Picture (cartoon, rainbow, N blue to C red):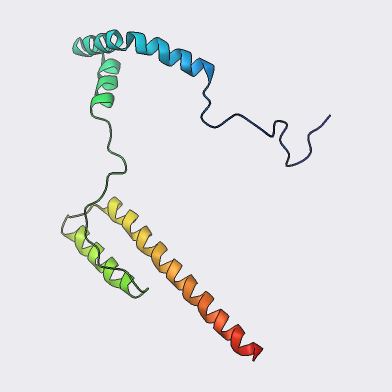
Length: 135
């Protein structure tokens, strides 16, 4: 028998939070010997094993991801405020207060804000025009 299109063969599915048995078993085995394994990796790294060294450094000095950017932007209330915010952002790049990649993320936030305001304004104006046309 073939499944109906768009319908799961197991509609209840796996419960949220349930974990794979193999993953649980592997974590348990690792937890029992984690200290010994870490010591072996460190000893190998000290002996010059590049792979072990990379493993140790990746765990100790993990790359920073999604860290907050302490940068003051002007208050955004209307779409026109985005011009000042972008100008402040450009000054921040020029003065080295914020990196170009961080500024790109902030610029997306400013752009999203202005798009929401523009959409809201257009919806409001359309509703007003429709209301006037019904009179």
